[in-house]
Amino acid sequence: MSGLAELLGGRRPHGAYRWQSNSRLDDVRDIVEHVGWRFAHLEGARIQTPAEFHAAIEEALGLPEHYGRNLDALADCLRDVSGRQLVLWDTWSVLARAEPRLFALAVELLGSAVALVLRGDGPDPGVPLLD
Image (cartoon, rainbow, N blue to C red; front, side):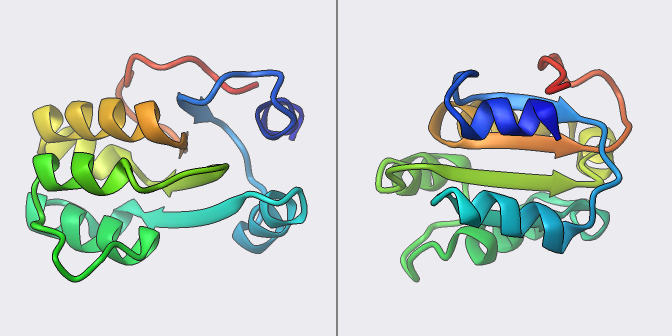
């Protein structure tokens, strides 16, 4: 978890990263929360459409009820996300293949507001590797 440790320790800037790791979800959550960061998880196997993406991100980040379930509304809500937040997105390639434009915009938007970690294989998302 050296790349993750660098990110959590401030030796890498916030942003979007790809991460090849077999670490258990609970272990990742424990590490992230142990250092005082908030943790959110997206299970991408269930995210194939814009509606599914917005429902998943709303639940993962605990967005307010007035969240409009579009990228403009997400950008507005992310302005309220402060501090150290890591979003681990497993099986991200499903949305990347089904909705490449939405995926690219979501990665850019999330990566500008939180530490976004895309775990697993898929098409090149144009972000650096964490390890």
